[in-house]
Image (cartoon, rainbow, N blue to C red; front, side):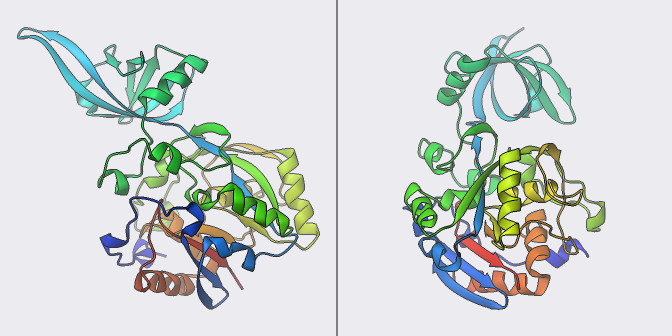
Length: 349
């Protein structure tokens, strides 16, 4: 398999920069075996059965994009430079690994000043990233970050418009509980409390797991031979209760349907040793055609970037030929793509 096998032409006009309102009004392409049906997220219950189990990722997106200034005294007098920081993941003692733009304008030991009393010292530069030591920790850090930070919108949205206050609601799921992500599990953005209640009333069960989505989810695949690609690692956890619920559903003949590729990657990581069980740690699982699914029976997901690892994942689930048909149909019917776009429900034969 080569990288070009997962390419397709996408008109830029189909890239969504705002979500549907209400959330459940988004369109939903349903692919069940060879059949393709045009529907809406509000219709989800029509394709689910009592005893099915949705697996939801309850990670909470941090307002991880910060804009600040570094100040420097020189021969010509004091000067300032604008510095943009995106938090990636916490290290220790209030330190964070970050992306800094422009990194070359910041020297080690210099301090960047943000809003809401937040500041950070550059401790080190590692692999094109910066390690920052913040002046606040714990609740004080969270409070200041909530005020000073903006949502870390994906590059294909951020290049078209800046993040604003509305994104703090739009780019967060209604069941977000555990802070740590710098990208949203976007298929879950289509759910609201009403839809969740309707599905529960239908006899559909739900289990929450946690995978803190990292900025690496947007990194392009740079090798032509897919077997040489190295995935970014993300921290996740499947609790003992979650594992037990999923195994019981399988034993009862119900289907396991992760909402989003993050939830799917996590539960399949928990089953790599054979039968699924409780699991926590960093996963860099790479799912592409030929992968043996042990847990997931179907998948609800958005439409993905050409040549991305997520295109490879859905191709592994449905088959490459069927995914090409699905995406050709989605483009022809003007479905909205990517994080704020429409949904698909993929049910393999």
